[in-house]
Image (cartoon, rainbow, N blue to C red; front, side):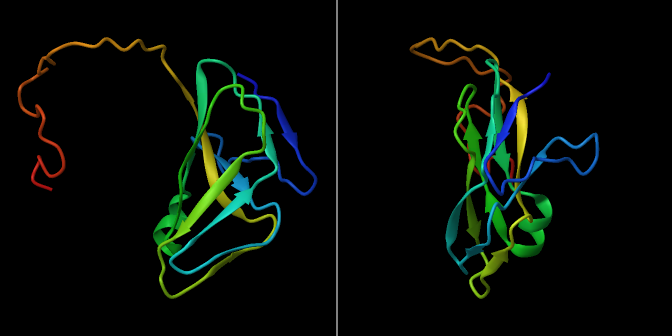
Length: 141
C-alpha cells in the first residue's frame, strides 16, 4: 500500500528506524516545550491520505515514555487530510522537556479497520464463562 504524504514548510517526512518497525516516527516541526506535569499540542505539519479501511494510530515512542515520562495517543481517521497534531503529556513533575525542531516526538501506526455493524440485544452470551463482566483486576493484577 502507498500513502500519499504532503509536508508543510519545516515538516519532516515520517521515517522508520528499521524496515520491520510497526510505527512511522513523527517529528517536531519547530521547538516545543512540554511543561513538567503538563501537556503541549504540536502540529507536525504532516498530512497523510489514509485510505478507506485503515486508520492511523498515534502512539508514544517507547523510549520517550520509559526514559522521559512522555506519552501521546491519538487517532487519524481515513480521508482526514489535515495536518497531524499530537498532544504530548509529561508525567515528570519536576522537569520540562524541550523538543528541538527535527526531533522525534511520537509515532503513527497504520492499521486495518474491519467493517463492523452494531446489533442491540437484551443479553450478551459469555464466550468462555471465565471473564464475564469482571473488569479491572479480574486476573489478580
